[in-house]
Length: 383
Ligand code: HEM
Image 1 (tube, rainbow, N blue to C red):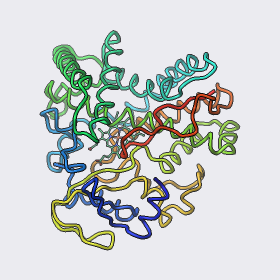
Image 2 (cartoon, helix red, strand yellow):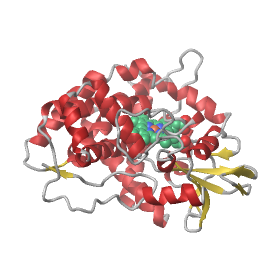
Image 3 (cartoon, rainbow, N blue to C red):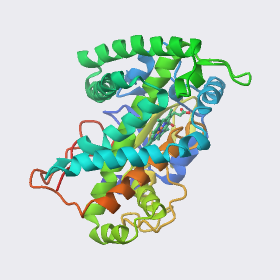
């Protein structure tokens, strides 16, 4: 998509797309402006291609990511106590241990699908453990996550959810309600216990809200981190000199720099949707009130006005102003978690695995799946 983005930024920084029934904004300055102005660019009642944006509204509870202030501010306050830097940093040893296990299993085979072996199980397992999902239900949890996300992706073009996803959501709702009620009676040290208790005057979440929030974590946190890991490996394989440099210095700082540059270079989320609340002048034109707008994060990250020589993959560059986690009030709640997971897993790879390359099974043409908004290879066969 990057050559198209470049053309849009130069020739039509504000462009109407008939298929998406949305205005597209492609310059860094305009994307940042829209994300900073939630009063003009609302996250609620957003439609994509003329249809309501799916799964989020399916659960009857209001959702963090589709709420505007003041509801958003209150909800964000409720759930952000589960994502403090202290809680997230404490996960590092466990992330390292799990990465090591998954990598050992992966490299016991002569060729493997990196997505299936490491990029996908790592984030979903960590989130299951954080939440305090019963170990015997973890397989179910992974299946729910996989089918719900696959369902979300499948329904984007058609508007219909596959039956497996509907069933998973129902199963998950039953289980999460049970867990929320159990933790309310008998708290443990996990994230759900924290959310169902009243702390320092912050009200408890209802079991229904716990389920909706868990689903948001699965949707917002798993596929994205999985994509980041896949995109990172791809970028390294395609830039052998950077791969070599990282193998020579696989420090956490160097791994973090590579992940940050991958976030900029090949963003796991290419675009976010918003709805204008009034007429807005932006990108050299006017968007009418009540219009859908897609903010092209992937394009903002490649805007040479912000990032010189944007098509160069350069882990030493300053990535300040990166749009991959959004900007403003909806800035990714899970960014600190990803910023632990991805570099720690990458360091384990650099330290314990000889240099990887494509296996003969990997076709030249990578499959990125049907959705435009999320970007990462569906599979990545390596040896
Ligand atoms: C929000 C990207 C990982 C949870 C967002 C947004 C983006 C994003 C672009 C803004 C959405 C908007 O403004 O409409 C990413 C990327 C990730 C990642 C690229 C990994 C590479 C995670 C993880 C979690 C998470 C690991 C949690 C486990 C959330 C939540 C929100 C959010 C709850 C909503 C915040 C709000 O509306 O206030 N993420 N995310 N994300 N993300 Fe992430």
